[in-house]
Length: 74
Image (cartoon, rainbow, N blue to C red; front, side):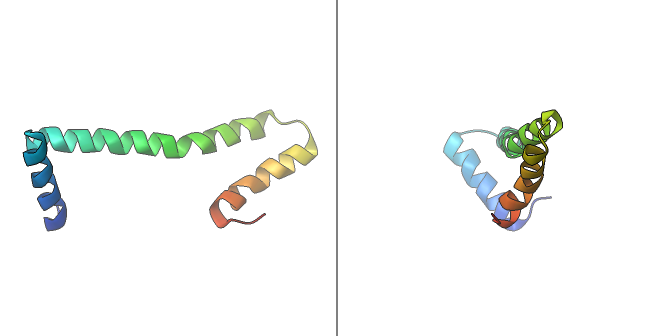
């Protein structure tokens, strides 16, 4: 069961798209999964660069990068 606010938004989307609730929910789920994949991609690329790095300075810099991304530290 959806929270009332979300249910209202889904109903509005079904009317706007002339679609069923199931199709709207499936579309929203697909959009969410794509978004999650896009969010994860930069981290995966950083992890790959970290694994391949041989220079100790680069390893240290790459190791600090997640903290900068999360906490904004330089």
